[in-house]
Length: 248
Image (cartoon, rainbow, N blue to C red; front, side, top):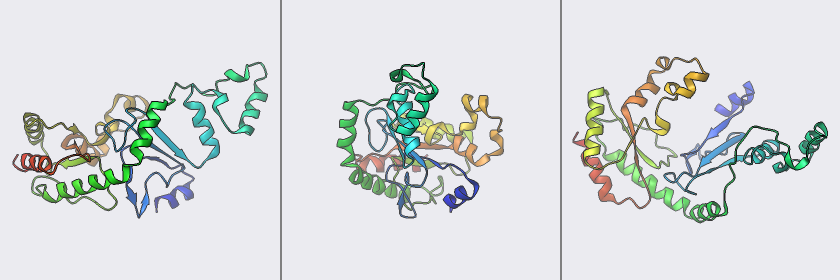
């Protein structure tokens, strides 16, 4: 398995679970495999604190450093006493209350965020079950002639419906988007995060990897969409969406 490879190659496994709350792999929840995992509480995701997110880890030192990073990189936020003593000893000329060990910003959450998150956490499993049922129904009734429907469904818990064109062309893509807009259906092209990250300015600036070498990722970038899936979504609205997509 992939974690065995990480151990063998000494690879630090970081899980991006921002949009996968409740999803499982081999019966185990995502976010519990790596040294570190992160969840997003953006308002369109499985649960929300309006903005913000959460980092999970069993590594005490990493946890301590994360506490610092969420508060301007200040040492006083760390709770690893040994680590703090080392840094204090190395910087006797600095005020212990204002030692900045990392360049960072203010990522601290608020009490209001916490109230919203704790409230929604109680309903997360039930809401996710509805999302799973919605997604199963959507994929089973989506045209397999026009779209890819042979997806790996085991453990899925998607907050959006996945639409991927078969034999995609830019003419077909433009027709799909035009039809969705005409029917008042909001969508995001490229699935999660805007598609092929290797096309993004930040990536091209820092890495020299030609995106053309990854045609599958680029296909998803051009010919796929996310459409919202949420717990209060009525079956008739899913049927309406299916009717629009299947008749394009």
